[in-house]
Picture (cartoon, rainbow, N blue to C red):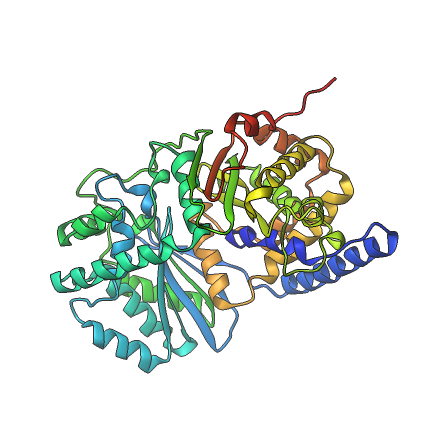
Length: 478
């Protein structure tokens, strides 16, 4: 399901002119993609799920291939932290590869290299993931290694100090990625006073003070059986993976030494943050409203609306030939260098909006075009546009699941978010059932006359005042 977040970028790849032949060409390409997606759906093996006695869920999609991806998904991320320990989840991700009770760091690296496998991990606001891509015959070794690093991390003082420096350098790298900076600012002002406002890496002062006791406390209170999904895709036999999980993860329990972690209720705040830096050549801006969580029935309709907003940058074909209204308007008017729509989902909330990069003098024009498109989605989007968006969304959703790693991630994430994996036919049916009226109703619910969150970095002097931006979130009717 998370692969849907990338789909909006595909909108700008289809072109359209204002004549019947170009329109036919779009739907011909979309129909071809849909046909490919349908052929894929016919051959998709079922996702099997088994719950172990201690609460761990094991899920697989067996392709019978020579390679496989297996991983451990943990319902724990920066959202479960507080101001004092913000950054500990990401710090723990780093420490997992620095040696265990039975393997030193060098032994771990040599063992993985000898398998010809890949070992990786990442931390998000709601999840921590450890996974390995390997040959199908090496799945038992991969599961044993993954189980070892999440249960028996050594957390030595020397290793902690070394990783402290690595994370601080990583923070400097993130600060040079202005898109990451803008989205961190966007979360900070949209969810003020809640853990969702925190960054994943945490503040510098926390990174400098986190110690082995903090890491051990976090492990003991978050890496619990009922919060874990073991997922596999590719050459993975379900029964064998269940046995491997039982053999390697049976010691995990659901006894909490402290308070049971829970999701702090979100509180969206319409507001803005501007970090003016005239030394930068371009302005980076994001505008978003609060959207729906993963399990909300409005989520897929918002995804169709995001696809209607589309994405575009100057390296692509002429904007005049783009099928998306906003792309044509922003490209023909030279209002931006690039833009992309987004729909970031969490368990109980989300951010829906547009991120764009523009010259300092055209920020106000681009913001006006975006908000006009917001209002058009609420009031006058057509059935033909919605059909085109669905024709893009459905095949791109499934065509992105073309590797064992992508499928494994999809399985693990969906089980944590939904409690099950949505069957492809169900997802297809739900998207296909969306109409223009549904899009208008849902956009009216989330967009119309709502206070947006705005984050801007760079030469942003010409960004309209927040009150002006707020006034463009509705149309006066005569």
